Length: 477
Image 1: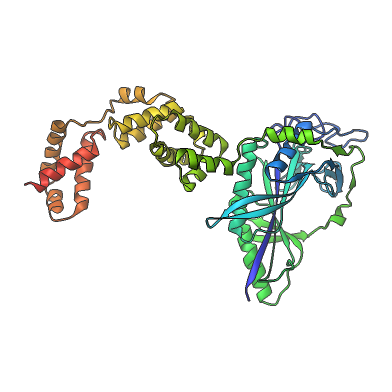
Image 2 (image 1 turned 180 degrees about the horizontal axis):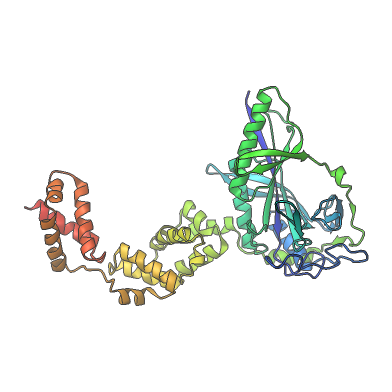
């Protein structure tokens, strides 16, 4: 029997405000435990919350970018539950009147665009952090009260791969809006997943399980993949799925039952009595809408049209806003009409260096004018590709311009034919077997000989000129 997978994602994002959602405590990461707390975020009797305006506006901005309808009337609610990291024994959240709802996010599935519905976007406060040790658990309340945006998708994702793509697109969009750093290592972005399976063609959803404890997008994909197989095997074996919350065990690559799944009634939601309802005026929405920058999909389309990038190239370069801005500065600084040399270098040597250093393209701190100057040396055949890579590394490490590095290291390419002929003759005399192999039709032998010339010139010889000289010399004997 064939089954269909149905997935819905709940993404929680820390908003990058200077102070917490309902008090004046700082939100800086990594401070001494329990050093950024006050009576309000700790829930002391008599303390009253005040809504952070910046967090409220950030939330509206995300809602608009996700094509949601912004509520003209919204309120906050108390979500009641007991846990050691929740000092008030309730969380200020939103229940029946969220800030934004009924939006969508487009993702790429096998070269086609699939539209995933956004059910709701609402603002709430985060809980604290439990630190588990061998014989005890400690709690740090610094995170308590940090503004948290919850983005809930419709159950329209049909595979772990689609879920992974959705998360990448959503993270990119939020980073473009500059409302969060989306750093999963710091807990700035967290994701819970709901997954169920049903018989192919059925309309009714199956019994879902909620997955938690996933600290990377890869972990989300792996957890969903395991749970999809577990549920399928269970049903095929005549078993039943139960509604529960399961934890992802990244070490053993399995999900583990944690508890039966709560429902809304278990949280005893009721309107937050210490905060008034909020009316959002159309003028305020329009003003926030004007502050939204060019978003990833729009930038991809424009880069393809203006700079001649392929869809694949544009996807890579625009995944981060800072990378897209850096690339555009390079395109504009390059005088040639065809931007292909810039594109190739950005997604070639530059991206390789970024990956080696575990950073972004813009994180390399290479100046756009420096990159264009380096491309000029390459284009005029004044340095070899090998030397260019050496120069690029030096640019990254010292922040120097390429001209200065090339001069200091004497990297100007040797193109003088007489000099190259002399070196080629030396290599031919030292490697008679390779010469004979090439004459016998072994093409790789020529590459070996070219490599020997490059070695003797410390990578400064023009490879194309060397190849031509060796070919003429060996084939005309």
